[in-house]
Image (cartoon, rainbow, N blue to C red):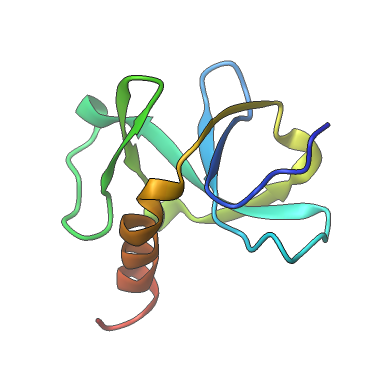
Length: 99
């Protein structure tokens, strides 16, 4: 299995995608990830749930569902989203701080 990189989207089951938000400097057997859901299936919270495009489809970043999973549970690399870094970091900051 390839080592998951930060800002890569991975399939963890047939229907579930996650965005790896953990630093590439850490190799600890787990990854901190944020689930992605189809954009039309949830009313987004401003500043917390930005829309990301993955393979031509719109997904919400479910920042409030931040979690850690085993790296071995990440089945298939789907996309790499380096251009989304700003909105991802902003959403994480909004969730974890008072800004």
